[in-house]
Structure formats: C-alpha cells, structure tokens
Length: 236
Image (cartoon, rainbow, N blue to C red; front, side):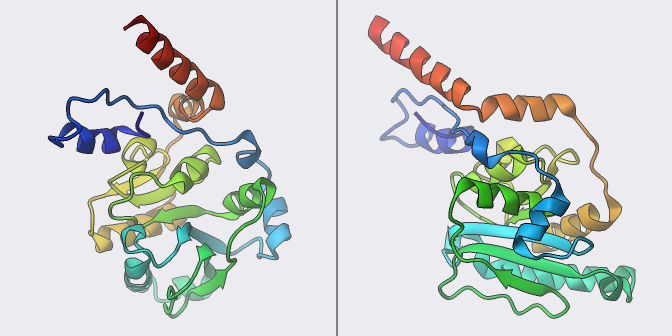
C-alpha cells in the first residue's frame, strides 16, 4: 500500500517491486487538524499581525536536502527581486513574514525585506491547525519527497500551496485552483508563483476539487480502502 501515485510509479518501474500489488491508499488528515477557524483568530494565538502576509514552510527536519530548505533562501531572494521589479515600494507597503516550524538545525533565512519567525516543533493538533490557518500561502520547495504530509494538511485547510511537481503535491495541487505546481528546480517560476498568489490573487474557486480532496484525505476513505484491499486478499 502506497501513499500516492508518485510513489507508486517508482515501485512499478523497479525490477524488484514492479510485480508486487502496488496499490494507492491515501493517508488521511486528522479532523482536528483541518478546522476552518478564522484567520484573524488564528493569528492572535501566535501574535502575528492581521495585515501582514504570511508564507508558511514546515517539516520535521528543515535542513534535510530533499525537503528543499537549502534552496528556499534563494527562492525568497528571487521573490524579493520580482517584487521590486514590479513596484519598488511594494515590500515597503506590505509586511511579509516567512514562518517556519520543525527542527531547525543548520537551516536559516537571510533574505532582506522579509521577516523570519521560527516556531520549532508544533505540539498538538489545535496549534498546528491554527498555524495553517494563519498562512496566506504554504510553500513546499521539496525536490524529491514522497509526501510531505504538510501539503495534505495545508490543502485541507484551504491554504494555497506552491510546490515543485513531485510527491503529494503532484496530486493534491491543481494549478490556478489551490496553488501552483512548478517544474523541479525552476526557482524563478516558484518565486513568481508566490508573487502571483499574494498580489495578483489569480486563483479561481473549484468546490468540486476541494470536495474531492476532502473525501480523499478522510479517515473514512482510508478505512474503506484498507477493508476493500483486505477483502480482495481474502478472496484471492
């Protein structure tokens, strides 16, 4: 049982596992992590300003190479350059904050004109849920992670996501609906996508897509798929 089609493709292309029963069963998002509380109320819990624009990035180890933290600073610098190209006063008129959570270790942000807040590991579903709801956008510069779970959780909280086109993002993100999928390592397009979501608001609503994600990432769906798989094996 595999967590998404991206992972399944690796198993099917491997001579070791290509003949195995490679089936996808999507991992769920806990109900307590996807309550749609108001952004204003969520920000009060973390002492963030109501009128600032918040970029969120989090994972267990922020400096793990495949999670993309090592190229995030460059992406943010490109974003700043793009903002200044469009309007030299844009960043002066808008406070932009990058909020990170997880084990920091050697990870750091040094991008001028962007505030950085690091929250370490988030304890409890309510706090994690509130943190997602604080964000204007979730960014996932992962270049080769099978998941990450943060994309499921951000999407379930109706937070737009910009991510490289791999892992969970390749199925959870629908371009121009709930975020943007960027070709791996195209940092310039990644930076432009952040700009477009924050300032151009070029996403359109697709209720059917959000309903599909809600169903896909529910515990009920996971249980039904596991039971169905078990019944097939019993009848084999």
